[in-house]
Length: 218
Image 1 (spheres, rainbow, N blue to C red):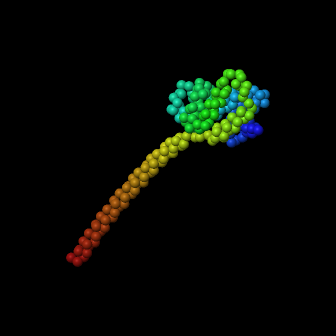
Image 2: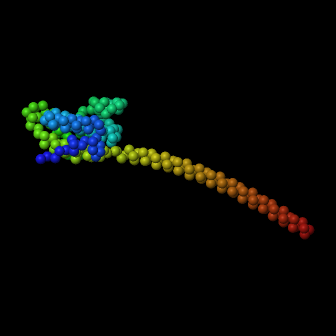
Image 3: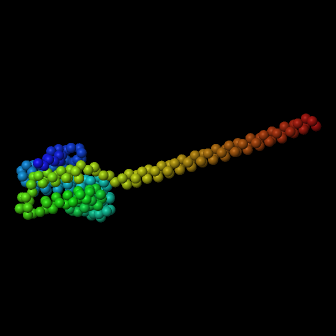
């Protein structure tokens, strides 16, 4: 007997990091399976996958997606919600984009592609052949290969910020160094000037003293 997927029994488990729309879709999957509407449950599963992939791409860094895929005209950066931002981006291509960005593995890509063709098959007889256990197996594989995986952040973004901070810090250190050197140079000049004045004063005093001694013995 196939194990009941945790995605269906407890989609709110923090280890899946699912948002409300994804949890809602998975609850729909569970209800459709209970009603034995297995073919329709595939559409709900697919919807959950798409939302999750879209979120992963945005979390990773949307500029990486735009630069690599050149979908600037399709992705609406000005939209206020996820659905509207991705409305014009082809869902099937989206899976390949995620693989190209190394956000999903080849295994995960192939698994999702299989689900896409399963739900896209309009042959009623074949759809009727989908069994409950098959759906559970699919969901368990999705747990392992997609939903339980951590969201990745592009580390280069942090490096760029650190480089900028380091540059600013180097500039500040250089300014501080110059300031200190200027101050030090100024102090040295004052000191040298004081020394010269002191030496000159001593020389004058010595001359006066010598003159006094000479005068004393004349």
